[in-house]
Every structure is written in structure tokens, then in C-alpha cells.
Image 1 (tube, helix red, strand yellow):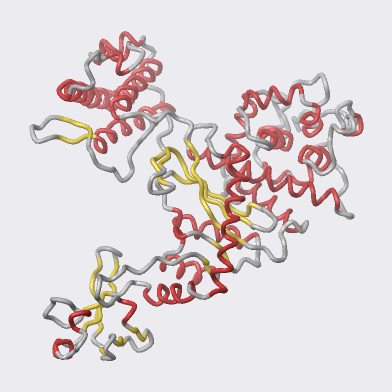
Image 2 (tube, helix red, strand yellow):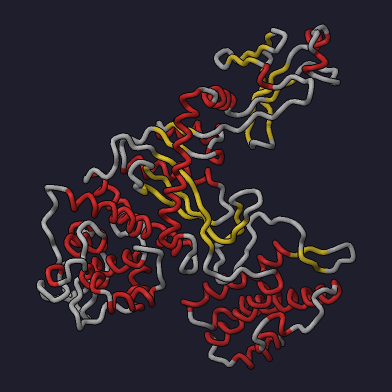
Length: 547
């Protein structure tokens, strides 16, 4: 194989370092002695080091150590990571690189991280996810997972790496980026492209610098927006018409930039009463906020706390701190959308998963039903509160529903079996409608509190998962459930494990890079806990310092 090889005994081996160079039970100690144990070769099948020809390549296990050491503390850039590996003896020992030999370059590290984001040829799963699950299994086998494990889910914002721009700069900077790429791919100068497109904006350093207007003037802003939209339509049409003239590997990138520019026009602009363009004063469902990081979105952690970027969802054990499963989504994704994925992965790794603590975002009746039916897991979270009735009126909680027979009894003790299904636009499905006879309601002494001014019989529209919703609200009132839920406050500790190691801000563009970053941080933390367990274990595996 074309792997790089070094002598087993070197000056950077643990035995030749100072006593405090590699402390027993730390992550560098674990990686230096047991690198091949935790990183088997099948995880990195397809890495270029397996090729029989070509220059010697760095072993995948050595590069994996460098990726993990990058996130050992608060995270660092790839350049700083390589510089640290050049001078830090602990890192050299963990990598197995002798003194006098240069560590892997920044380009090699970037190529390996791109390799980790690819799917494994045998399983079809992302390689970083396979590695994370492998480490979690090793932690469970070593006893890191407590027998009295308490599982909890939570999410936290992750700021995107790309620049978040306003509408004018999205259009202007997007045009300039499209023009620069077209000039590069068509082997022309930027001045030629600017003259061909009749777009002097391409030659300016900034969008707003190309339009020296008073931005406080509505008429000036309208004129700039109209000019930008006209140029966007002309430029995108030109690129689409002549895209076959550039190399095939870059056509998709050019067309993607065109789609992004047209999407900004659709989502961010509207016409006023005079027919002039203006920035829409509304919320778009999936608004593009960055052209350099187009998968980032506006998100809301709370009603008043807004962020730009992604959202990290995690599930872990509150007792041991083991991060079992993670997922990263755009910032506008609701927390509950990742519940099934997190629980499914965690249950495949930890067979004793039967209960998960979560906050109100995960407490919907439908979500509870699906998790219980599919995985047999109970969600302990505050259920959605019932709408409070008007003052002096009766609410839905005063109506008793028999779900076995389909009947219902009102507050006056009158039972009805008039039940039919009607379409609900709020839930997107057909829901049960219960109706009482008008004559019974006319003679009822509670009619003023029940049906109010309506002259028809009482009508009650049930929730699609009314039975699960009522059961959750009843269970929430018990002291046992509320005492158990108090442990969920410790889920902030799991969040801190990710954000404290550099997970608060993405270090690269794109959702795939954010996924790799979050899983690398979780793997680093789990291996750190594993190192402490192995250090005190009487049957630790034999040291293997050569990959």
C-alpha cells in the first residue's frame, strides 16, 4: 500500500515524551496508543491511500486524529490546526509523526474532510456518521453509558459561516459573483463581460458603491431595485442561453447561482400600489439570506431571539454526558422534525432507550403518538395547553369523550353519538365533529355558558390525536411526571458540550460541513470520556501506535 510509514519507536513516541506530555486518560493519550483500535480500516474504505500507485498518502486514521484534535477545545481553523500539529509534541504523539517530519498539509486535511462527507460504499451512510456511531458503540461496550441513563433531546443555534446580506446586496453581490465566474469560465476579462452584459456594476468593489444615491429616499431605492432586477433577468437569461459553451463541470454551479438570484426576486420583492418595486414587508417561508451559504436560514430560538444559520439537534444521556445522536438542519426547521431521526439512531445504539425528556417543542400529540407507535419510546414533555375559554363559558375539557364507543357527554350530562368526519384546514386531515341535538341544547340550563349566542346544537371539533392529547395532559398533572421532567434542565449541559467545543459557529460553508463539524465535536467528546474509562479499566486493549 502507498501509505506513509514511520519507525515504531521515535522521539515523539509516548515513552520519549516528558511525563506530563501525555497524561493518562486524555484524548491524545488514547489516540496515540489505541488509534488503530478505535479507527478500523473498514470505516475509511476508498481513501486514496489504498491505491497501489502514486505518491505515499497519509493513512486515514492519522488524518482522523487530526480532525478530532481540531475540536478538542474550542475549535480552530484548518490552518491553525496544521500549525499546531507542527509544534505540539502531544499532537505529534497522537498522530504518530516523528520530529523533523511535516504533518499533513491544510489541503490534505480539507480533502479528507470532504472524503468524510461522502457516503460509505458498503452502507450508503455518511462516513462521519458511521464513525460517530462506531465510537458510541465502543463507549457503550466500555461501560460509559450508565445503567440508569436519562435521555434528553434539545437544540441550539449554529451561526452560518457565509455573509448574511440585505436584499439589495443579495442581488448586487450575486450579479458580481455570477459575472466573475462567467468571465473565468468563458476565458474572458471581467471588463469584456461587463460590456457584453451592459453591466458596469461588475467593475465596482461593492454593490452600494456602484449606486451613489440617497438610500433614505424611497424613489431612489425603487430605481435601484428596478435596475438590479432588470440586470438580473438579463444576466440569468444570457447564462442559461450560453451555458453549453463552458465546461460541463461548472454548468451546474452557474445555473445554481441563476436560480438563487431569481429566488431572491420572488421572495423579497413586491410591487406597491403604483406598480413600483419595493422590498416586501412580509415573512417568506424559505427566504434565502446568504449567497455564499445558501442553505442557511433565519431561525428563532425564542420569540425574541433570532439567529442566522443552522440548528443543531442532539440526544444524549444526562448521567454520563454521552452524545448519542445528532443532526443539523437549516435554522427555520422546527425542533420536532428531527425527533424520529434522533430516536431511531439512538435506539439502534442503545437498546434500553424507552423514555426521552424534551421541552415543549417536542410535546405535540401527533409526535407523541408516532414515537410511541414506531419506537415504543415515551416522550416526557409539557403537552400543548388547551385554549382557555372565554370568561363565564365552558371549555372543551368539560366534555367527556368515550373513544371506544365514539360518544361524548356534555357538562349537563347529555350524551351524543352524532359523530362524523370533516376536513380541517388547520391540521390538513379529516377530524371528528361531535354534534348535540338542538332541542336538547334549547332546554339545557347551561346553554348560555356552553353554546353561547348560537341557535344550533353544540358542535365540538376534536383534535386528530385527541385521545393522546388528553392522556398527555392528564399525565402531566401527576407529581411523578413533573418530578421526572425536572431532570430535563440538565439538557443544557449537553448543549454546552457542543457549543463549548466550537459548535456555536460553523467553520465552513454549507449544511454538509456543519453536519461534519457537529459530529466531529460529538466524537471528540465521546472519545475523551472513553479515554478516562480505558485509563482505569483493568482489561484495556493492547497499545497499537502504528496504523
